[in-house]
Image (cartoon, rainbow, N blue to C red; front, side, top):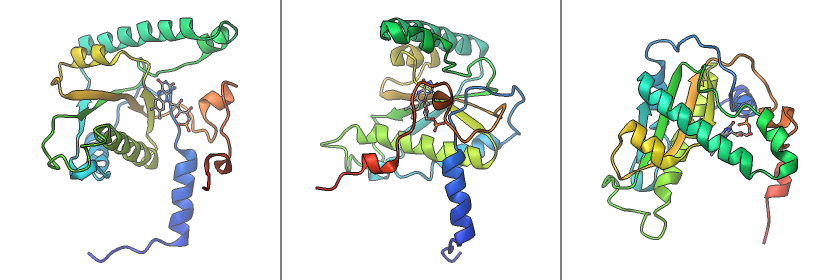
Length: 212
Ligand SMILES: Cc1cc2nc3c(=O)[nH]c(=O)nc-3n(C[C@H](O)[C@H](O)[C@H](O)COP(=O)(O)O)c2cc1C
């Protein structure tokens, strides 16, 4: 197949995809169509990775007991996070919905395998964390691919990583990277939920670019 040429119309659509990708916390409970998760994971595996190590590992969590353990893990971590907030922000924090664990039909835990020999260690000697970065890129690729299929993703990091690894019985060399709630969103929105809730707002790109 010859290399594709991307049209201005495609670029406009792609920009809309970036702008309308959202972290979703309010899901419908209907399941994803059969095979869609496998397609999303296959797309995620096209992400760049240090040394072509493809260190991402995906665990679809379906067993009720394991889901309950993740739910309890989140509850404990979230209670600790609430207590750690400055006093004047605690009421606002408590009002936030920070996960969609109960409604999302699909739960996907993502790990990075620090023990993988794929890639023969290239790029990882001075920066072993490049393995984790690679898994993050796979998540972002999956996130965009999901949104292009009208499917929402919500990233949950308010979790104790050791507890997640134990609940899912994964090898010791796997670092926990993120827990994804996946399903159809109750609504599409162009504004991040935390901005709508008044917690934080997005700054313009110019404030993040320095020149030296
Ligand atoms: C590494 C990472 C961890 C996150 N963890 C959580 C989380 O635990 N709970 C939550 O509600 N949102 C979480 N988010 C989502 C962010 O709050 C969200 O991306 C941000 O508010 C911007 O909104 P947007 O993704 O809709 O643009 C996380 C996002 C990232 C990238």
